[in-house]
Length: 228
Image (tube, rainbow, N blue to C red; front, side):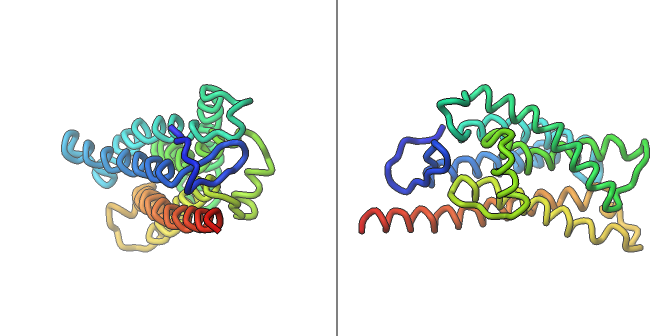
């Protein structure tokens, strides 16, 4: 998938990422989410409010393969890490990220119980696809890269912005989405994890838009430097 353009690119590791690559990656991810909601609403007559389990399952079925298969094209050091090795890294990172997401949600107040188990499971897998899977596919288990992106939030190139900003957007969106849950409004959408899921999806989409803005700025800046 990564194109071999010599202009408007940024090198991170041993892979060159073009603006068109970033646009296609985010477009497929966004279209996957939109298609999932459309299929759920128009074909199965479900949404996150009426049937959160089935809707989250549909989102996972569509978005997880997209995230793994597309981000694996941008793996760091492609000479030593094959495409399928990057895919395996993403598959391994998926449950690890889901476990951490579920643990973090429970620590922050998510309800615990058998009736919430499946909901939390699908939500945590979707969150892992937004946050952990892209980094696992691209950087594997390289701790310094994980630390740079998530502990220090210091992206250093186009590729980092592609994965870092949407991931933070999903986390911030989920956190903001949790605010109405404890309020005594007695609305169906306040139940776990409906508003949190909506917040994560919206935050992820906003993050992709912001990511593209940074990619365009960096790409144009590098092109200007080359012309000089």
